[in-house]
Length: 320
Length: 320
Image 1 (spheres, rainbow over the protein chains, first blue to last red):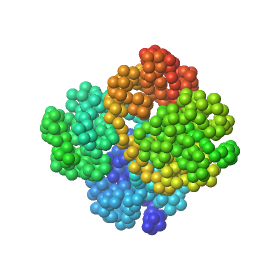
Image 2: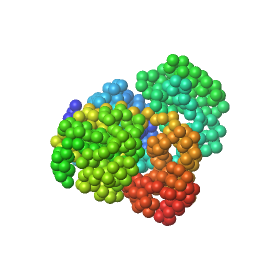
Image 3: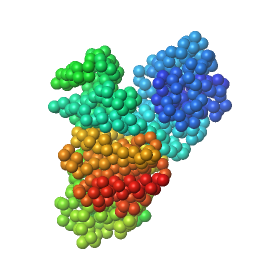
Image 4: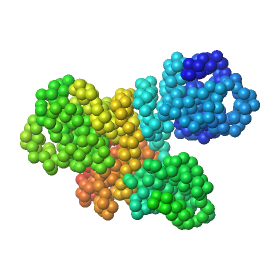
């Protein structure tokens, strides 16, 4: 299939590359690596995303060339979507143009739930990141990786594998990562850029939130909470709470972890995480939310105390 | 040099392997991988450490065979020390026996500050972990890695590279990690075991320590501290502080991060970390410690306040 894709890419002079809304390191890295490779072949490449490139990826060469969908009025005869389960994942604006203009679409993705929406579909659920598939594609195109492509692919791989920690990391993933370092990728500096630019507010907030940690008697449920006064006092918002739910989750024996964040006097957002086999998506749905089996969220219209009482009570009943 | 070491190892039937006090994943993993490899060659191997194997590494095959120094009355004619900058790092008890009995000592280490204390010294500051050197040694010994050795080496590599995120991660490090996965290492499960089996004590301690966070006026130095009363009140010891220094380090703009841990009324241990180009090994050495450019440690004989005043004062002067 890769050779077919290479033939199609070679036939076209103008190519658009896009990825999913609210892009992460895999979507940005994959878009850039493929874009730079196609440019090196003399193609006219338009890279586009529904949303701006997150600041943390701004160091990647070419990231300033990624346009936003709102700047696009037409698409070329060939479009590539990477890391998108369905065409709607590219965002409404660009999707409408594609539906109207009917270009050929190459669909490159590693999600098992992919809907095969493309004219050509390369789906590999075994790939840890779309970037792993882009690595293979660039090799099949006969383009030698330069440092800029290598940096982009490193970010793609590192993002979707949680720095090579998750179970999706395969022998091949690490082999590619090793080759990328051989191309000159300074992974230490990249990881520092990605992970060590935390705001002081986020740490002050963590210090304020950790004492709220509560573990159920049987040790299977752990939760933390933060009230609106604390958020306001520290000038914190949602981005400063990122990853907080992983603290209760990291405790030995805990199966379900919750993080309650008071939004206003009558609204509490709840993040739910599960280790092992509990399906927190089903719990979140009882409270009008949703997500995945291992990570879900919901919003409860109640005071903080009442929201904690309701959700903790329900989860405790589910566990026992 | 490796071939020389292999010849020495082959000549001896009884071999003791040890590593540094308060062992981490690299010391335990390296001890086990080498121990299992030598056993597979029919050697009588004694694995020993000054301190017990931290619970989180208890899943590693053979970890229950690692004795504590207090159980050792004599040493064989050949001893191997891995991941130790100096002989004193193996702990007083075992060091005394070695000084008395004068066995041959093979010193395998990746710290640039190594004192070449062995009869044979293999020092490679380029190696990300001692485990990387043990990998090469096992290969030079002609022993094929089994899954138990591979798991031990994976833990060694992952520990000292912060899951392959730090700048010490080389092309070769990832190449070895890739080969280890090829041997059947389930890295996703191992990482869950390492990172999601945190003790409640460690989180309670983090909650108590985070409010001590102090950032210098220019934002380049950040530090935290914990006193002996807090440690005792929470029933915490050194393993519960693991990684704490990464919190000040993770703050945007911070170049040097410190963590002060009071051991008793007159002794304070200091962990030093650097981002960018500052060499904290040189700072640690001023205070009688050592380590790597980006990660070092020292012990200051002073009250907590005085130790903070001295080290923070010195670092601030170095930065400016």
